[in-house]
Image 1 (cartoon, rainbow, N blue to C red):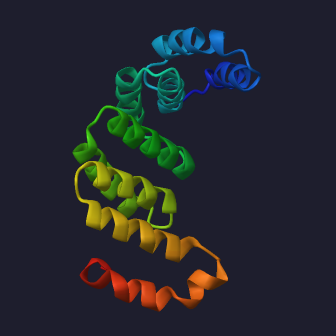
Image 2 (image 1 turned 60 degrees about the vertical axis):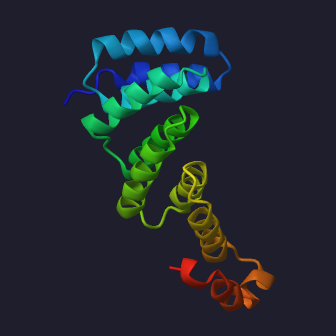
Length: 163
């Protein structure tokens, strides 16, 4: 696939980082209209829409980017997070749980999915599972000496939730 769109996308994203946010969304929409089959453009459009508070528009763009298939694991993971966050902001916690559980299977070493999944489970009313997941994630990702020393006890206190 030709990437003649790439320099333009880089310039638009650069403008966003340069503080010229007012020009970014219209420019991304124009680029996306010309290259609607490019997942990287759809993902950048989704991110920009989400940052402006247009979660419905962002959700549609995230879903399109995911359906088109992003070329790198990092882009895929970031897009999955953005998608789930939009679902949470739109009070669709059950869908966010499903999406995040699938993302964890795809990216088992990405702790961010566990943290967002804990939020989604909490919002969907599964507070015990949310707490257990968050505590397990903390224990697995922290290098704190005190937590490491008490890890076995903390896991035991979770009892049946310590799955």
